Length: 85
Image (cartoon, rainbow, N blue to C red):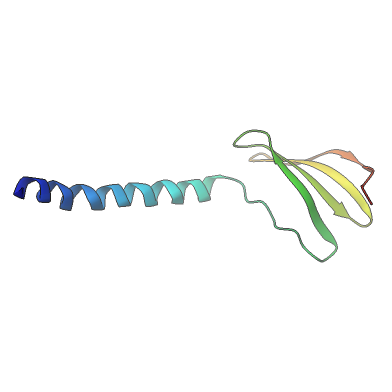
């Protein structure tokens, strides 16, 4: 019983630290997605292609743009998309 408690007291903080470290790395190294804004730029839709590339439909100045967002930057794929309404 004592050996079990000793293992528990050692491994439980190690596992908690490991989980915290993984979550910290996840937030740090994945590109941030801006939330929909009510100003001049509004993010209409976001689709994840894989863990590092996202497609975003952004409305700016009355037109819609299709953007590719990755670690390497932002690239415009198409503009003047027809909206739903």
